[in-house]
Image (cartoon, rainbow, N blue to C red):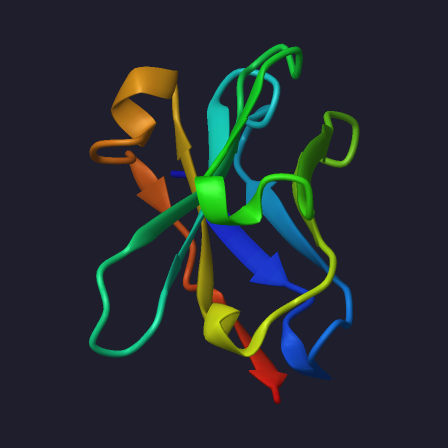
Length: 124
């Protein structure tokens, strides 16, 4: 069983930065064998893709709205994927989820594993 645990969310002001962490708990390495991604969802809104990193870490993808401000990275030794978020905006208030899947193509459609999420609230 794979358990994804997010942390690092909180209440911040407009323009602030946050670094979210997603640690995978499993019997073996996860972040270096699975593609990892971040999604976010606000109440009443559709789930939005934020960022993805492939197994090797050599390829990353970002949603259009976060390009240039967010950075996804990972630490294989810590079995952790990160999302550095800069210049946060109020409209980016949402529950941020970590997801994992062995296929980068499938993770964008229906990820195999989800975390419980960490709340990010950006005040105006």
